[in-house]
Length: 219
Image (cartoon, rainbow, N blue to C red; front, side, top):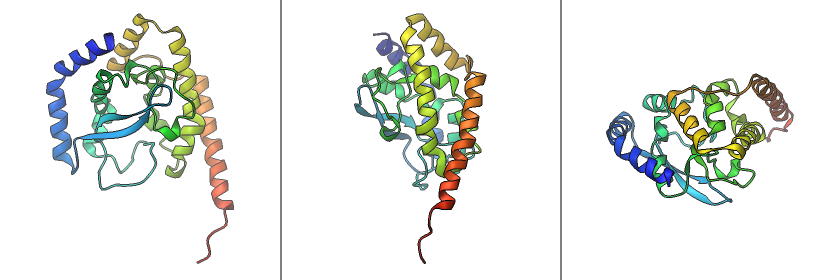
């Protein structure tokens, strides 16, 4: 009930911001205002998640994961991503019952290795902790981004979200949403960050070694 009332209220209050963002997206690059992508929902269901488009439509292919400096992202898109404004249309998904305001972030189906026990959220514990994810991935080669997402990031995020959801209360959800809006709250712990960085180097070296050892096709 809170999800529906809050999402409906925010859609009305934020209508001017929606119109301004939509106009900026439309005028800055060719393509539709909105971007829709299939995501994994609760209990292995799938749904179309809405976002404001932040990437050039003529740039096809590439990893599903983005990082700072991705040339597919438009200048307006970079601004929207920085302040998470591209996520606002997901209030529509909340009204449809496909998402909640707070929960694990929905992933593309091939990145979700386990069925979600909860409805995915617009924000969540892992979302807040990894709010600088694109900066953390900056030094990882593009061809390793998807593999790193599945092997390292997804398990870490799942653990953070699961720990939060087990003890979540209405008050803790309100606090988490407030921290999301204000850009505050705890980031990933130092030990987790060190583990993240070590695994980044380890996986990158292993994948690079695999690429070097792979036989080249005959010309």
